[in-house]
Length: 345
Image (tube, rainbow, N blue to C red; front, side, top):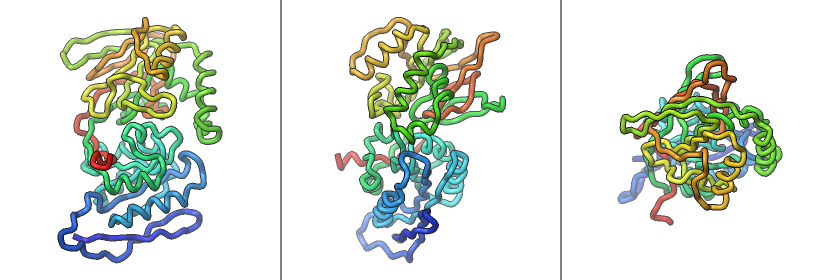
């Protein structure tokens, strides 16, 4: 077995990684779990001017003996395509450098493969990194990755109609939403978080939520027992993580990346007061039953528009992806994550 260490050079304000000659591992030295990593960097995530932070993080990864190859991805399509190339080229790990949107794009090509997904948080919210207890400082995150453990998890999967009217599907790790929250993503300027930060983003979302006319849609869901249930909702949020970080923290009790089912918030009401009570409860850490809002575990959820209803939007991992009709299911044993080692905690 060999260990390869590369160097980083600056070219036209972009980072490029060059492989150096390989040296043999010393006798008795443990082989590295991560040996060949493709690094996909989204320069549009989070704040600008973070090349130096990325360079230091990559240096830590290379110093651990990992061969690296860096690609700068300027769009979600590029991130998905280059992750697919990494799988075909034999990388054992793809490192997503960005936020939850970048991770979402990368995992579309890693789902169902043995290639691991690692995260260097460069986004604004970094919900998945919060949930996995990955340090938010890139150098600390890099150190955690090279000493990390592998964790195999199921993924949520959503089928929907894209904006060209075609049937499509996406995997998700954080959450998928239909109704109010997806409509907010439709209305919000996607550059707002980057330009003004999370406080301005939440303020704008609050203003839109307070004036939004809620649209109803029909669902049918099952919990794996064969029994089917029906409901009419104004909002459906299927959550896969326990801890969002920032001000949201624990939004849905019982949600977990390891849970085999979807943990869903189902809002049957159009009462803004009920919504407000639920979110306030999540922020303050208290839980009580709120009329019109149910928490359920579901193995499958199918969503349809009633006749003559207006369009209802769909989001996944904070990315607006399409509209109804939609179907949510779970994909077991779908993704390998690199997470901080339990031994180091």
